[in-house]
Length: 237
Length: 237
DNA sequence: TAGTGGTCTAGACCACCGA
DNA sequence: CGGTGGTCTAGACCACTAG
Image 1 (cartoon, rainbow over the protein chains, first blue to last red):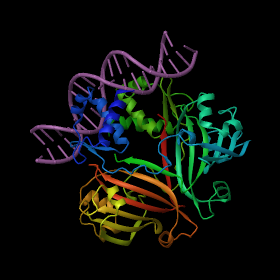
Image 2 (image 1 turned 90 degrees about the vertical axis):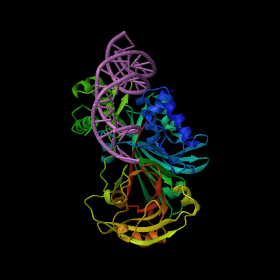
Image 3 (image 1 turned 135 degrees about the horizontal axis):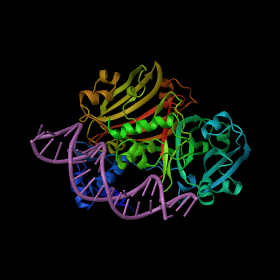
Image 4 (image 1 turned 180 degrees about the horizontal axis):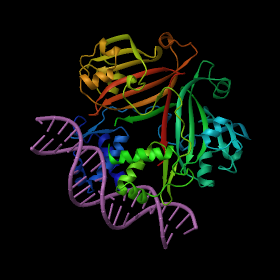
């Protein structure tokens, strides 16, 4: 564990246990650095993490303050900042997949553009239905270049594509760009997610890329509106 | 302009103009630091920004790579990471407000909890309908402690609460915690957003806080599903 | 003006990766 | 092994805020 992470963790604990009064600034950086026996830069970096998490705020010339009412994560299904795949998001729960379709085809213009490939580069086209604890949870339409993710088969699709990429192909996920929107449910949603024609869905459009910057996945995930909440924190500059 | 911001901007430009080939790592940090006449730490910090924006990725022991297919921001209405209020998000467009209701009341348990106040602390309860270029855009239900934001009146509500907080009260916004979900439209949505009974809405639940960490706003914004997309970037650790 | 956080430096050592 | 990014230091100077 890095020093700055350890300090950050201790400070997070102090906030949650109300070690510091919430209406006063916490001690200044030099004092804290002395207490934790580190340089001021390292102390600052530890606090940077808590600021990014929305737990504290700094005011130059004044001090560092505790944020008093973060939105609590009381909902069950929350995606925050992970791009590890569903299987690794709902740990401790049973995740199943049903394969609705699995084909290889040439990409449309849109798919080719988002994957940065040519129109004659074959892609997998996959539609999977994912269950969490035997309840339909999300239906995903995924495109991936065949050359980048070789050897994909039904066995992998029943388990976790992300784990296959990590463990079998020994590739690493770099991150993802996402767009989130509400939409009306279509016939497919209603059929597979077991929702009413009047139920909306939450759609997440995503480009996932490897840690060398190459996009490997373009997908649309449509979630039951009553089972998915997306959370974010934003901090003013 | 800080040095690291200036360097970051130049590097962003180089990426967009394809100054560096997309399939090779960019020069290493020491080389770049020498070119920009700065320390390696500063160079690293400049690149940190681009990594956070999802434009590049680092691989320890290997190099720094350009991400090849970020989701383009071709949609009109995008909220990314700002908490500046609607008026400042859609610059260049006409923003109007209609006040649906404006009251002072004691908060519910939920509102009190999210604002970190007691049940006998009065709050404003505001419902506003916001128009962009004369089209109904979002209906907002907002709670704010009266003591924190004194002097709120209809004139302010017709313009921008955020600007009032900044300019008249001379307070500064620290940031916000948000939850995003899809929901069925209710009677109020249909009436004010001019949407059909079968149209869904995208709801954003938000706790906004000042730069001393004190929450000043708890709100629910319900957007027309066809006019609002939420974008995020996430980078693996 | 005193005290805070923000930036920047020059250099050290470490951890990881590929050949 | 050599080269990369990751961490950490000790100190300097700057910018902002409050009283």
